Structures are given as C-alpha cells and as structure tokens.
Image (cartoon, rainbow, N blue to C red; front, side, top):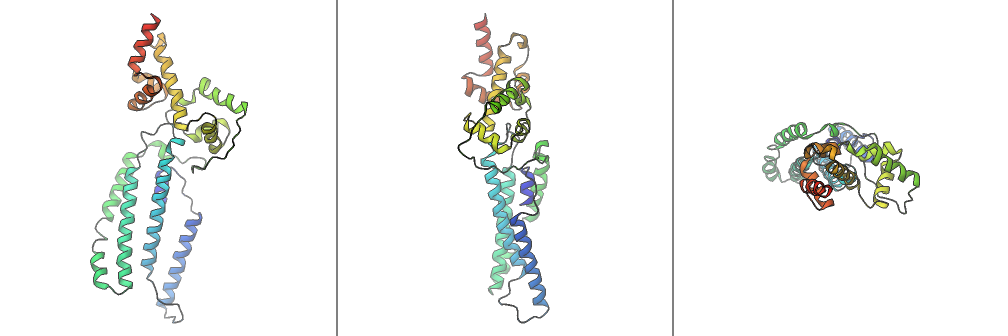
Length: 285
C-alpha cells in the first residue's frame, strides 16, 4: 500500500487509521502467539496462526491499495496538465498479482487450520513460485517509468475531494487566474500540476478544482491545454515565428507530446497544425 502511494506521488503517512489498525492487530497477534507458546491454557480457542492473520492483513491492504490506485487514475485529469508520462498500469498488475498470491497463501493456511493438510500442501506449492518475479517487475519498471515529477512529493494533500456547491468566484480570483494565463503564461511549464497553480493563486487545490469545474466548466487538464492550444495558434499565425518548426511551437506552448498536441489542436480548431498554418498564411496574403 505504501509502495503504491509513493509511486503515485502521494506522501506515505504512517499514522493513518488503517495503518494504526494494522499495527495494532499485528501486535495483538504477536502477544497472543507468545502466550500460546508460553503454555497459557486460559487463552480463547481456536488459535489461528500468526502467519494466517498476517496474510489476511496483506490481502486486505492489497485490495485497498488497488482501490486507491483506481481512484487516483480516475481523477488524474483533475490534477495534471500533462498525463502522457504517467504510466501506472504496471503497478496495477503487480498489485493484483501480489493480492492473488496472498489469497492463495491465505487459502493454504486456512486449509491447514481446518485440518486439510494434503490440500494445504498442494496449494502451498504454488504460492512461492511468482513472488520474486513480481518483485523484479516492480523494481525494473519503477526505475524505467518514473519521471522526475513522480519522485517529488507534493507539498499539499493529493486526495481529490468532492466539490462543494455552490461555489462563489470573486472578481479578484478570476482576474488573477487570467493574469497567470495571459501574462505570466504559467501553462508553458509542461510539468505544471494542480498544486503548482494553487500555490500561484494562494488557494487550496480543492478550491482551484472547484473554480475550474464550477465556473469554467473544465477540469484542470482541459483548462491548461486549452491555453496551450491558444498559444500554439498565436505562434502559427505570427509572421515573426513562421520559421519555427511545429515541434518547437508545441514545446514552447507547454506540450511535451506531439500526438497529444495534434489531437487537442484539431479537437479545438478543426484543423491540424500544418493546415492551420497554411490557412492563416493564405488569409493574410
């Protein structure tokens, strides 16, 4: 669970309710196991082995980690202006693999507790075949797919909260946001995130998200890339930048993927960048 949070750029919080509950359960199981080994007959029966409880906790936290990953993926456009380099499908598959392995181990332990020793032994032969392979995949892909953005822990909470309605937008907020877009051109940073815009606006990420969705009817990804397309349009029309390549133009506008740029540009303008440049040059003549 902590590994998944770290790979998603979410701070690892040691003292969450789920972590404390898990630690407390493990501590109780350890103390109980020591009592059984010490020969205390007044302990309640039946006794469940420590390994069974630990595996059960692994399955529960593994499922919760997959839930967090799914929630993060479904809200990714609300926090990032560039999503091409965010590839976490490998993490999902590894997490699912570990949950399945833990479930097999749990089933094997449960069969042993219930007295089905032969079945437990047969099931147990499979539980040690893939852990090292899955661990190797996690290590290799975590090093090859992580970007500098993923390595930086955000300064504020990254959990996407539900918007509160109604949301009132002040004229000061609108003018400040327009200034950041039109004069400062903060969107030209290809790694701009919701947290960064929130810091520039002196607002919380939650408030910025509500402002964009409630007033502009856009999520963060669409809002930022709208201004990037406008910037690219201006450069394509400008005679002073007629010698610039299209790649240089979309990079200066804040895009880091040609495919994404072409897709969004055509979606908003109805033309490809090359067609748009030709049309504007002909109209000026």
